[in-house]
Amino acid sequence: MFKVFGRAVLLWILFAGLTPPAGAQTAPQEIKVATRVLPPMVVQQGDTLTGFSIDLWNAISEKLNLKTSYQTAPDVRSLLDQVRTGNAEVGIAAISITAAREAEFDFSQPMLNAGLQIMVRGKAKDGDANPLWDLLSLLFSPTILVWLGIAFLLVLVPAHLVWLLERHHPSGIIPTPNYIPGIFYALFWASSTLATQGEQMPRHWLARVIAILWMFTGVVFVAFYTAQLAATLTVQQIQGGINGPDDLQGKHVATTRGSTAAAALRELRAQVEEVSRIDDAYTALIDKQVDAVVFDSPVLLYYAANTGKGQVHLIGTPFRKEDYGIVFQPNNPLRKRVNNALLALREDGTYQKIHDKWFAVK
Ligand code: GLU
Image (cartoon, rainbow, N blue to C red; front, side):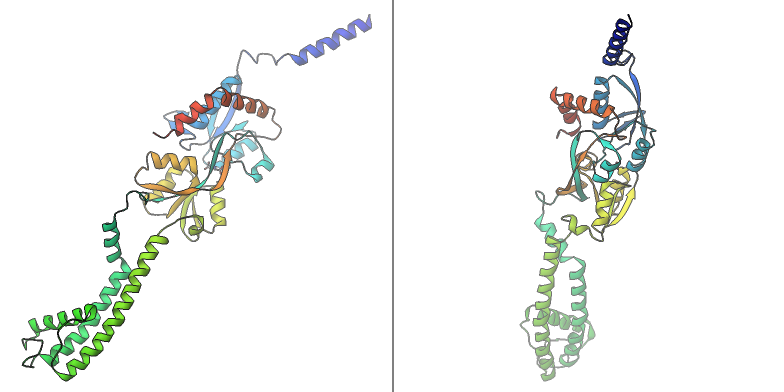
């Protein structure tokens, strides 16, 4: 009798263990999800949130029969804090999977490939380069203007000496003894001799000595001027701006607070301006308060193709690869279910649809 009863209990325990938790298929389980606004991963539209990460999480939670209430954090650090303290069960936005974070949290499978990239002001160089503009900006670059200024001051000296010596000479190069317009003849002679070795020669012997000395000065001047021009051109072409992460040292660079980009920038010894909203980094770049923005490539690409179109461009490819993941407290059993849902969404095409909605090139 006892045996039969014991078996019944055993069967009951087994059966209870196998059935899904009561209500799982009917009333959805409520879940708190921490996120943060970061277009196009998370986009705020009035009171509702949308964006790649939100659409993806909504699809996951539909599969898992979860009812989500989102809570937004000002930066990635406080987003992670919400998960750490159990204030939220899940964190999803643009959270990079890093060794340090993996030591403290559990991550889902990667939900998007990302990486750090550099964004600067202006249109991309290739395609719409204007040689005339390049030439003008070279001719009027500050270094060249300084050189021309020095040349003008220098010209004043032989011009006055030659004017003084030549003005009373009957066949001299200054046809009038008056200062005006006499000095203009002298200035013209001195400038043309400096640049091209002018064809006129003074008649007075001392003026001729000065002319010879001035011609040598001209040779030296032209040599220096050419060298300076070439150097300015090279600097503009090769090093004119930021061409890669190594050029960021000492530069003012904006990024978000507590991000992997901020850590990378400190390693690169840039002067980091950390902001809470990525939009503030974009504004700082456009307003010339910073030289570049370094951040996650999907986020920067989206901005450069939309709001920032024509005003900013990205440099090269991501210089550090990262993946985004969904974050949980360690050993949360929900993670496995989320991973399953994520893979199922990839297999049934939903993931691709969401990806195209936010990242397709229009
Ligand atoms: N991928 C960045 C990180 O996880 C995003 C930072 C942010 O949300 O501002 O560090």
